[in-house]
Image 1 (cartoon, rainbow, N blue to C red):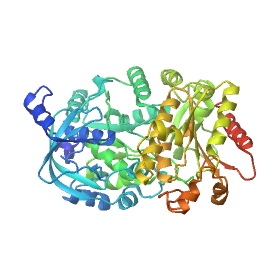
Image 2: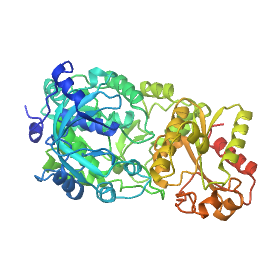
Image 3: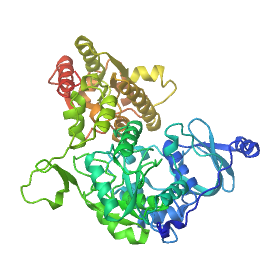
Image 4: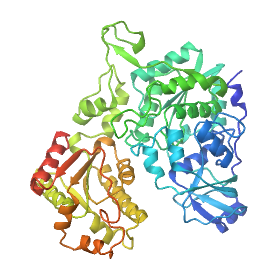
Length: 564
């Protein structure tokens, strides 16, 4: 039986049993570095062999070649760098050992540090992501990463702990063994971060039939695009649809704990390599594969067919054949599905975008049409997404100190209460007193304060509340990072556009005067910049309009969006 011969070079790291007291005692005595959620996902895929031939976080040579040429130092295609950045204030030395821990302080691995090297965020963004636009979710995240990477041999103490969907959390070796029992020489893998709708079902079945292959449905359940349907909802829909509508003799459903980079064509190649290690011989590459959506100018980050072209070019070298079905649409006249490119001129068809699904169906309580989704999928989505007027939303006021943010926000709160919706006000100054006491006004401290406000607001919104935030939040990258904490349709940025001279005239606290005298360093608008939002949902003019008029404009915006 032949399954991906190139992928037979599977490297995985031995996992020490968690009850091995000697190793746990050693880990407890070493200096610790706490990993981000992204790095925890990367470590798990390193440990299980999903990133083979990589057996560690990348050293300098591998990292630089991957960034610039999509290859490792030995010339192996590896399109996405997998590195471990550390905070600038972490003191580590070569040849020392450290314990890598998750956010709950559980020990995951012991690293012997063999390399410490600097990396350039701008170079990474331009080469790997093809953009420096701060609206890209990974760029917003990278702004807060340290400027050094570390690398070295790993001894894995324990894989990250998962308590959900345990039967589906299979390592590459486990998946390969399961695929062998299905008895097909070829395996088609399908990457998804969305619920499986009828068109997905159709294209996966066609691909498997075309290649006489088993089918590996392999959804991403780590970090995906901000605003994606949560993976609990997605996996519940996969389970119900696969169980009822796919052939159990030829189909395997498993989960992939990957932290996606949303890097378009490069990510497609990365996904192909990973699925090769899971035993796939073919990989479905869709249009807009791993797309991060629209940039700050409202344009797509990558051409829609770029991933398909890259997959066809590098597939032979990766040892995985690219399957590029294009967009599948529904033909109402004949009750069937066809590729959009195969239709005759003016032939009628139907399809739905993600925005249409949310706004024209789920948010107004309308059942998704049977031609688009199985009833099982529709039911799961309806249980997860309440009507729009019961959903939470964050209204983020940004502008110079003294622009009028807090005043407009307080009036808006009153209007919301009058309409029957409760809201929480998170004012920047108040948060500094109660949640961020001790922080100064350096860029790092300002970013910390803003992201704390964003985190609290995201929890309010996640539970169906309205969060009204009023903070100077001067830096675009940090505002984008906060935006990434929310579903895109549940975040409203309001730029309170008040000129600097007007803010100074209104300055009851005398802060601008102190800043002019040099008594307040790093003061926004005087000695520190304010980066004007590039594409806010709403801009208010506090010179020509009163605070109440502006508050009612925001209220009207929320009403038009269906939140009221």
